[in-house]
Image (spheres, one colour):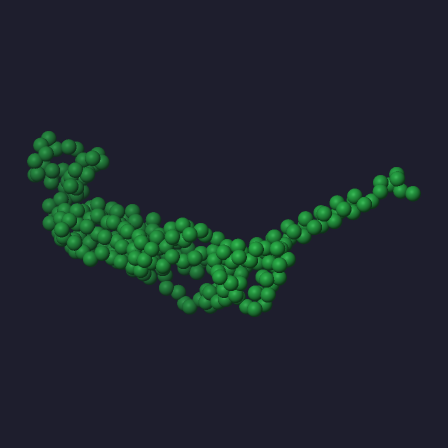
Length: 257
């Protein structure tokens, strides 16, 4: 299987005789692959070899968790940071991976390509699709899928959680952000909804809450920004209308008595 794949990709030349196993093994060894060495390993041995090789890679973190003030709280691995290495070691040791995502459970299945009957228990995790403000349902599902895939691959290949998402001290700002807004903020939002003649039902759907009282502090800033922008637009139109009416009611200077 590995020999055929390497031939198709042009990594090695086609042996003159397809049944010449000795020559095939020599070609694989010449190109850095030892078919006899890896094909006889069971799936647990292959996976452990793969984990060891990945642990030796110098993988750079590109993900950044940025606070409201613009400071970077911590860095973490994005999926694309380590997936090329996962693909590389799986190809080398004859492993195949299959990620399945459902709205309740996400699963990662690892198969021994040299012996598909040699199995290992699938890696699983429960799924919860968050409702993120300013994102539609498909975007929320996509975000949950990416997170689940990153988590399962890191679990299967033992890329430790402290590497994926660095541990940090309890963050008071984050804790405050998930609290519901104050009564004063609720009153202000209701007043702005009335002044801007905004449909409350559509507004709540946009914010992904069932009532104004359920709005969280972390979303208050963008909510107030949108409502104030709408109020400013309405005030500007009213001012323009007043100026127009005033001009229409005035006589030209040459006609004034």
